[in-house]
Amino acid sequence: MQTLELLAPAKNLDCGIAAVDHGADAIYIGASHHGARAAAGNSIEDIRSLCNYSHRFGVSVHATVNTIVYDQEVDEALKLVDQLADAGVDALLIQDMGLLSLITDDSPLAMKLRQKRIALHASTQCDTRSAEKVKWLSGLGFDRVVLARELSVEEISAIHDSAPNVEFEAFVHGALCVSYSGVCYASQYCFKRSANRGECAQFCRMTFDLIDADNRVVEHNRHLLSLKDMCQIDSLQTLADAGVCAFKIEGRLKDAAYVKNVVSAYSQQLDAIIKKYPERYQRASAGRVDYFFTPDLNKTFNRGYTTYFLHGRQPDIFNFDTPKALGEFVGKVKEIRRDSFNVAGTATFNNGDGLCFITTDHRLEGFRVNRVENNRLYPFKMPANLRPGLALYRNNDVAFEKALHEKTAERRIDVNISFGLAQDGFYMRMRTLQTAFPCEATSNVVFSHQPAKRPQKENIQKQLTRLGDTPYRCMEFKIEGNADNCFVPNSLLSELRRDCVERFDRQWNVAYQASRHSKANNEPTPTYYWQPEYKSFPYLYNIANAEARAFYERNGLSHPAPAFECDNQAAASHPLIMQCRHCIRYALGYCTKRGGQRPTWREPLTLRLGDGRRFKLEFKCNECQMNIYAE
Image (cartoon, rainbow, N blue to C red; front, side):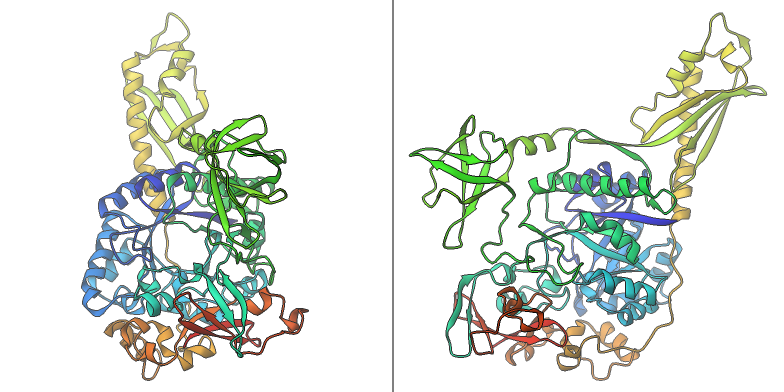
């Protein structure tokens, strides 16, 4: 039976609870430091509260400790890991190999992590694109590897075939980094803000001119590195068949409304797959969710959607016009008057909706709807560049946002309850129904068997199934041995119920802890030059502390170089600052290898920022990759 895990982001405790309530099987969250989103930190106490809440449903909590760590921060990072272990987290996401070596040695902290069965996950920042890298990481002690977003189904399947005992986690939804994660230094080079330290300045969302070798402008003021957002909701079974066990939603800077909508959509899709193939798949957590709204991914923040490279290279992965959210397409502008216009389409609108369009000169323009009369819209201010025939998008749906701020879901664990006669009184038994964590508890109460004057079944059922604020919901109730013919005071039934639920809670915790495990790892393999660039630019190993340096020396890397962030010389020598599978030549229709026309320019091509800084493009067609160098 293959277990499927929906992994949701948590900006904070409220977002984490929302993710659990709406069907997530696991949550990933950052602490106050050393998470790859510096703006999404949380206290240890909030993480402890999230663990306590999540574990009631068998939902695991993964803590992100996936930045590179400087020498002076090593002790602080180890203290954080220790605190996270005490808080109850189930897994740690790691990038820094120095930190990894310190928590997998024979130290008391390492033994504590093993004793608590805390899994270690290789962050997407580890730049994992090959089976060799996966097997190497597994041999180092990682239980799970987060794969590079750029991989195709065929590549994932081939990696799984080579390393079938390693858990694979893949991103399925949200914003895309144009560079392979972990090997992007553009923010650090341009703004002294390291993406490997959670401080990305979103260089890839900026506007550039594209200049050819003759200094001719090929494209002017376009978002040439800005990708659409990923959406793999229709490919979950394909990914599962390829060997992916965890489906990750990006968004640790997103609010609770985003989490509710996206988690609900993906959770319902996974449930549909499991309903179709109940003998093949099961969810990684427990509980059934009742939804009080209809999720719609088009109504949540997005830059337009793409399947990226999952099904091979596609022509629709980017949006050169804007890096901002377009939202859902709602029709085309029809008739324009002085203060209003109408829309050709079937969408309905509300006062306060936010709409936008792309102008004829490739700029995004937005406005707010002040009043709606039938299908005629009266903007707060008429947009100057609105024209008949322009495609119109809604990036703020007032009615949908209002629905998301109300009660949208309720999650409960289905149990059956039995009540019967014991030798010296009565018993109550609770048992889970079809869950990944089989659990049972029985409680007894002493009371004489006195004949009742009237049937007791209805009252007994009412009292024992009143589960209130617990996470349980009684789906089956049974009275055994004619116990309903006996009189039982309500106070006794309440005491019996409370004791049985408490026992069940304890047994549930035992069952959950038993489900946690660490896999046996493969034998470590020698360090590889994972891609050719690693040999030419050794800062790609991201070695930021002495422990990391010693780690790589033990693993066969001679003369390990410091991380880009730690090497003042690296920035002075036309460094490689991005590796991308996105290719501007292909995007503009000039990849002759894939049927495009012959370029009208002379290479090399250069990207030029508005402030004049230039970045050379290298098209490595043998790797189907585009490298970006600072000039």
